[in-house]
Length: 144
Length: 144
DNA sequence: CTCCTTATTGCGACAAATCGCAATTACGAT
DNA sequence: ATCGTAATTGCGATTTGTCGCAATAAGGAG
Ligand SMILES: [Mn+2]
Ligand SMILES: [Mn+2]
Ligand SMILES: [Zn+2]
Ligand SMILES: [Zn+2]
Image (cartoon, rainbow over all chains, first blue to last red; front, side, top):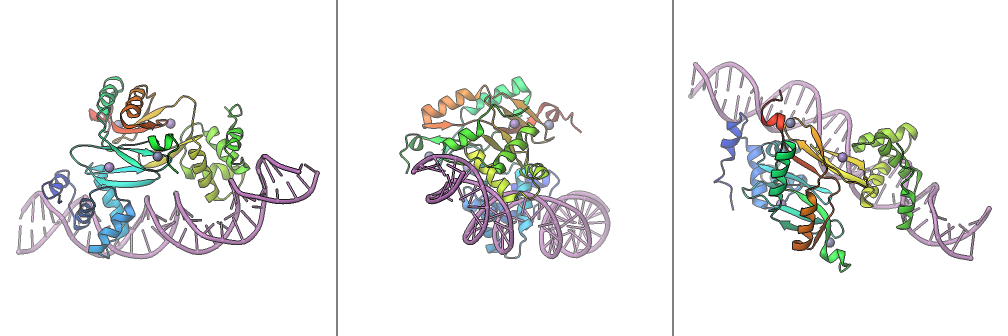
């Protein structure tokens, strides 16, 4: 339920940056939620504890944590969502019609990454994709 | 150089929608540019010809054209870009460090799509992905 | 060509996100 | 424990994107 075990502060300091109460609160919010959060949701959650924490600071903290790859940022069905980056990556299949998203382990992406490195000298970081498409229910017109 | 050959108007009307001068101007702008455009760039380009065309209308036209899949909308390196959807899809490998993007034909995605359909009943539409990672130059610290 | 329906636009208000800059403060060094 | 540097925050202004609603106009029917 908590991310005590993961030494976020250590990782941040090791790179010459600083752990701050503001950044900690953002991490806490993401951890408490456990899943996807829109930026606005993070702002609201954080301000429960610290009502005067500035909105811009939350946005900057999210950007910062994404740059360090401690947090993922993904556009899913028109809205941007943030999520704590777990050891084991996962992805989502998002239906363009009904909007529902199913999780996908992305096993098959390994081959892609290998090929991109070999053929394009590009080391892909595929931590949290959102692939768009049409789900089974919608394809068969079974969704109202 | 032009998209006359493609019957955008026909496709739009066939679905019960309407071709309008505003939508045509947006398509013209995307066609003239030929590549990626931020929404603001489309607004500016369109207003060269039609200075009083409203900003909201351009945003709505872009959303509309994306919904019909005549235009792709993609987040690349932190900014959202729009591009005319071509017959032959293409993708981009975006370096997280230097920001440079190389094109990728996405040949290998066919296997993924097949597998997603078979194993997850999901018909993926992979028209214009932007995969994040680190390019060869940056990986070897050859970029300043 | 004219009429009618309703998809679409323009507008103004609003919300979300970004930015520059001065004030603050984390934290390594002493 | 104190100091100094520079990373970070808060603030206000600005830009970017969204929304509801009344006015407009695309295009099919007659
Ligand atoms: Mn997720
Ligand atoms: Mn492209
Ligand atoms: Zn669906
Ligand atoms: Zn690079």
